Amino acid sequence: MRSHPFVTLDVFTARRFGGNQLAVFPDAQGIGDAEMQALATEFNLSETTFVLPPADPANTARVRIFNRVAEMPFAGHPSVGTAVVLAQRGHGAEGRLRLEMIAGIVEVELWRDADGRPAGAAIGAPQPLSVGAALPVAPIAACAGLAPEGIVTVRHAPTLAADGGNPRVLVEVTEAALAAARPEFGAFRQAVEALPELGGRLSLYLYRRDGAGLRARMFSPLTGTWEDPATGSAATPLAGFLLHLSGAESASLDILQGVEMGRPSLLRTTARRTPEGIRATVGGFCVPVLRGEALL
Figure 1 (cartoon, helix red, strand yellow):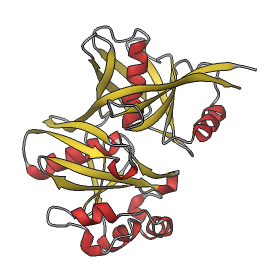
Figure 2: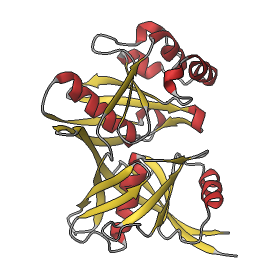
Figure 3: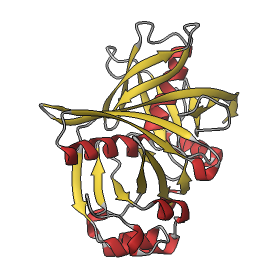
């Protein structure tokens, strides 16, 4: 029987039992692909990460990310949380890390507390913003259990966008609709079958304006995440997409998510125009929660 240590953190929060939960295996050498998927399913969190030596020694580590049903090319809160765990183990003394992921290299800027201890991180999405198809309102509203009138289309229709291999449907909604939204599994299945532009997968990122920032909720029941308390890989394309619509050169935006779940999360985003397209970052704090070992 093999023993593999793990830790868990709450990510995008400065207090324990807020934010988004993450399990990290800081030394995953010897864990097979099927075992990684089985462990992610066993933890039953939105994602679990497995750290391996980098393919390129110029980088810090290779990180594999699994949700409950499949491996992911990139995800936000797993990148932030894994970076903090690596920093706690002595990596990134100069304040930066480079993580190899399927979607590309994730650049990390570490955040430290007043005593110099790793406390959070900001990560850059591994790819420039890619804006996909605009989608019809009615089936998307149905996925969130909303009437079409709850969808705001003044600035944009529900729109696919990505910057790391995880397309999200970005949907502006009214204040009442955001509070009332509930994922409807059957409607998700019907939308995937009826809308080929979705490519067989569907995650909804609902948002509304809230003063200078945003409030958001994310539903992805087809991957086992009924609702997600903090979704960095949706926050970055949203930040980039809103910059794309505004025509500005750069912007920063705070997104509050997870309130309706009792796990409030603060995601701090930036977006800027570059020669290769719009690039976005997302950052937040982390709190350690558990440590243990998996027996395989």
